[in-house]
Length: 365
Ligand code: ADP
Ligand code: GN1
Ligand code: MG
Image (cartoon, rainbow, N blue to C red; front, side, top):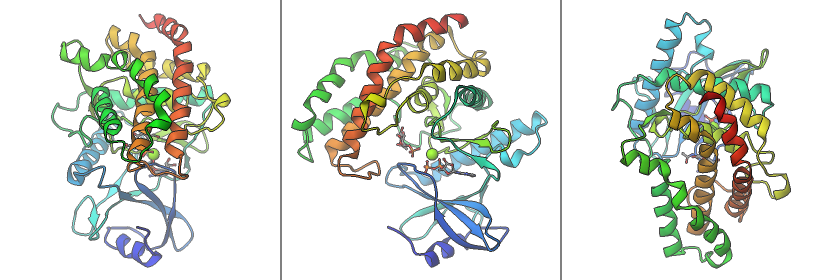
């Protein structure tokens, strides 16, 4: 439900803001939450206001507790390293006037963070920026590697569990709620063909050969802020899904988004394919920071991570299309189908480049 300017200002007045604000305007292009930038009387953007999608993040207490824990933990690590300008290197969430981590207005949940000045996010990166991003996401995992087990909850249970995503997919096929099954039969077959080979992580975990680590779980290229002056990475953002999971998530989603020569929802499939220099640069940066905690098996599996996350996203978009578009925000009636086709095309391209990508990993094995 859209809010009026007055309603948004009333929501903002619940938070312990340091400066008076005059408006909040749409910002970013996420598929789940609503993000707004908050502007002060002298026209400066000072805060970011977000409406949490509580149909998806059903335990808002856990969500905000996780985010508070993660940001405090990273802040402490940055202080120990003697870093300066820390308010631009980790998100700062502001409490409400009664000391809570979010505000509930009767139908929606809201949170406010400090806007990070002189920063920008990218939808596309160069190999240089990709290398910086790899280091930053690797460092993010490193900083959280010693967070005690059990500290962070699973904000969306089984979020990147491929077996679970396939179960949801099969339920959607069974129900055929929107009557769209016939239209997507070929895509369904392509997904089924690969199902078994895409559940390696869950099997290795059950066999005790793979452990869970703290992951960001949404390492889309636009979930990172770069310094507008130096193009160095400042800060990892969008922390809703930071939780224990399998390590391939955080390389996989970056390859899926930044390592694509087309867009996530490109209608021109000729544009979609893997961008090898972006993959190589990201992997180099990531390995520089993460090599010390990765096992040889995890290193070997990193290119598989790109295929897995692209496959998972194909399955998730198609599931939503079959269900009648109940999860992702869509901008046209067939948006989820368009997204599915573009992700599947990327998957095929990743499959074609699998041997070359595997070979690239040999330098660390
Ligand atoms: P979502 O993707 O769920 O909409 P994000 O938290 O990723 O939400 O924010 C959307 C966009 O807003 C980001 O890609 C980034 O460009 C910008 N942004 C978010 N938080 C900040 C912040 N604290 N400072 C500066 N820019 C921000
Ligand atoms: C969603 O909110 P956003 O756009 O960062 C989704 C991710 C998907 C992504 C696909 C909580 O992320 O898992 O990979 O869309 N987030 C959730 O673009 O489901
Ligand atoms: Mg985001």
